[in-house]
Length: 200
Image 1 (tube, rainbow, N blue to C red):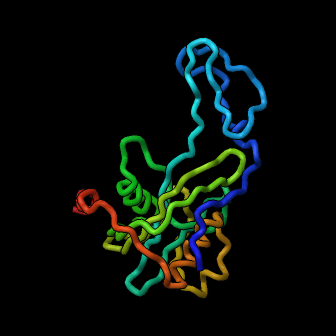
Image 2 (image 1 turned 120 degrees about the horizontal axis):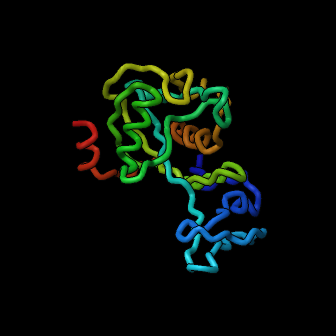
């Protein structure tokens, strides 16, 4: 099973849905027009360029001692509600992706983890309003008390059989878990100094 690193569900000109109306530097109104793919808005007054960048995030495969993976059910009101996903979320400004992983797992599952490494990086063109780049990590449960939180309403541990019958919110999650259960996942080490700060 090969890792999937680009998932595309958005239209060719999805960026037009994320354009600014006004220059963030001087406040002058941007011209309203349909822009080509990868074309950038530039202020005619001060020259500032509006760079449209994907939102960075993390997803983490949290393993139990017997090799199962925890997933959570998204709230009905969330995007892709009532479907299942791996724990994860957006990286906050001045937060490392390793710190994000610990925070998101704690917020969404109540568990503490020891992160073992990076298993993939995925460009997710989720729809015409959401483009993310996600660092996929793997880690082992090290403590905490299991309880769904944040935008998750339920948690469950899955093996390969439960995985096959699960309806996932994100195609990338399904493919990552496919690779995990296929047993051919390679792990890139992380900066152990940051991991120690997060767990000590």
